[in-house]
Image (cartoon, rainbow, N blue to C red):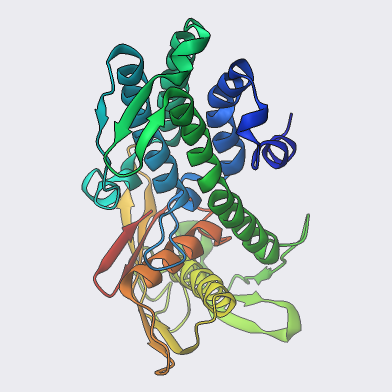
Length: 340
């Protein structure tokens, strides 16, 4: 059964109409709902925080796994002890102090599954009257074993809409920014031999790039690669073009995402730099591109650092050029340094 079908049917289940065996089935299935809700989100998308003060999808999953530890303990103590006291937990400090953003989604879901399967085995072995055993919660008061199982299922269902809503928004951004299938991007490169001695490497490397709309750009190898007079600093070189392309694509994606979230940008300037090093095979390559965007926002509504960082993360994740090259791209904005 798909996530949508299962979720719609179970979200508002009437626990009074469910027998204990059916309730246990829902209890065990809950981690699968979470996995389906996350769908095919990438690791970067799972960490996006689009709204100040709101958790990312990954932080929600970590919270669910963390809370399952409490539910497991509460259920076991209610079975094993007489009227145990169950202490409430302040969940707010956990994501930051336990660094939920650095956790692994699969490991968190595996933890949930293991805890719930083990607890389900214990619950299935209990006689019918055990479900009426009671405990005292420090905040909610008197509760039965069945209440605890119901609450553990409802807790997952409570957080599923947030994950699903955010996933749909991310997928919409993907669709809106995705290029048409099999789109083609053409350029024409023209070079002519002007001597004086081609066979001995004495010839100009200057050439022309031609694009649609009649645009032509003079190009040349970098003087760092080919010394003058066989190259010229007055023309663009391929390495500069690569850096500019990565910077331009990031900017265009960033502007689009900002506009969709209701932010207004007045000016965007990026003094991007690429670094050429040698690979393990000794071949030079542009190993890192550092983007240093300076953004002027409309003064009536200014985003905070966290929101800007999330926009840059999302822009990098959706940038066509960043997804096409193997160079490491670093975005330095305000006090943030996001390494990709």
